[in-house]
Length: 158
Length: 438
Image (cartoon, rainbow over all chains, first blue to last red; front, side, top):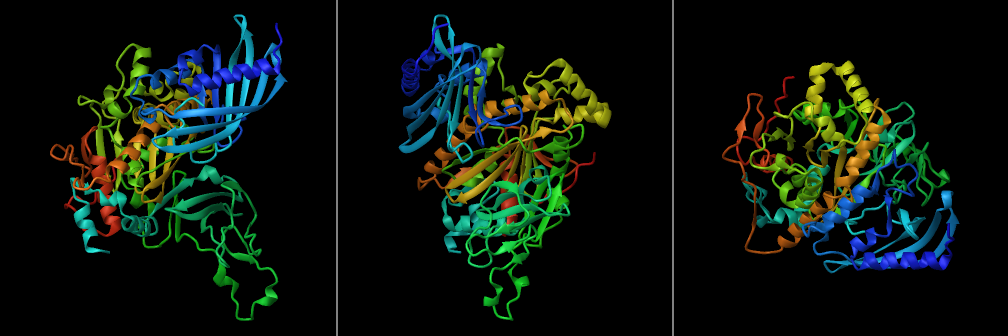
């Protein structure tokens, strides 16, 4: 099992951010493990998804549905699509079980849609696992600062 | 009220004027006549389950607090210190023995009595604390755990107000073998730049689904290898119904096979064992026939005037913020007395479609934004609501009904609206309050 240093983790997060900001969702899906969890907690940090509603709690099939729906061209909340750029910083690595690495980072995401600018901020919690000769994303948990507030439209991939 | 805003002319039986969505004067009048003079939905008993629990709520845009006192009674007090006006409760939810305004320390009980007045010597002997209790809702009542309140006492009793809608509320609650749901799994909160009535109209709109949600159905259909959402086509056996008082429903029960809804409800996400346990407990409590009835109707779109929608597993509270801004809170429910995985499946099914990142609801919201923008156009003054007007019928129990895709629910909403707003009836069909005989 190879080790992962912070710079390599940052490279992966930056690559992911760029794919998402450029709406290259199919390429983004290639960064994920087959058992990906795409999780955006609601009303707080997200401690107990079995008993709490989340903004998103996608396993792999559901995440593929999400991306597939955006690709139909008639997902109206993304027609026209959000234009985004996100900055990722404060990257810290934590050990996780079974050789996985937990990467915690802070982000600011700028969104422009229909002439309206919005800014989201929060923490990404990526769990990375070494698979098929490279590090892949097994869990992407996004804790938005404003996840207990009114959010009009979060249909792009955060 | 300026002449050009005559409510009788603006809201007709088959069409409504764009000004009811765009004029601040009409919005102000709605807040006064609908949200300050009638029953308003505020939440569910399970949200203030314990003594001392509270939840902040809104009457239209006015801040209020729902509390449970030491005797277990629910009160609704306005979130406004009687001294100099500051809000006294800052958290959305919590548990407290009292509410203290931190501006000058005035302190109130959960019933709203002024129980603490710092440095009282400064007030003269004529000062009467009793006159400084928080403003309270004149009436608070519950039905099957749903909490409604009215700021004025001149309202009919809640069961009479809910009328024919009670039958459907019972079905929703009876999905639990204990006859009780809980609303403690969090709340999806979204909003839009549009009038509040768009959401109330849309929540019971059987005409829009195949267009607004085509992307969702397409993806599901591809996966299942068949066309989905046939329910919302011209050939659908389902009906839309006017339940009186502005309430309405898309009634999915007619002719639906009783066997299917379980998988519909849970989207096939639970084990056979859990489903069997659940079914057995329903049948034990309600019997086979009633259980079939409950399940057949379990996928509801029910509107309770003015601000509650019950859709899927959720209570949807529509909160008017301004004439062109609305917040919407979706509180999913879990069922008491069922295997845990049933409730987990309910939550996951809800997430797939609803909330700010859901596969469906954000596309509705997009339409509300588009409508509010489009209504800036002058010259096109009307929104057409006549679909099905010529084929609707009144059943023996006094319910106006027509095809699922017809605009019966929207016309029902505006009948309720006209009554509440004090405008004359558009047609003699105004009130339909007959209770359904079980």
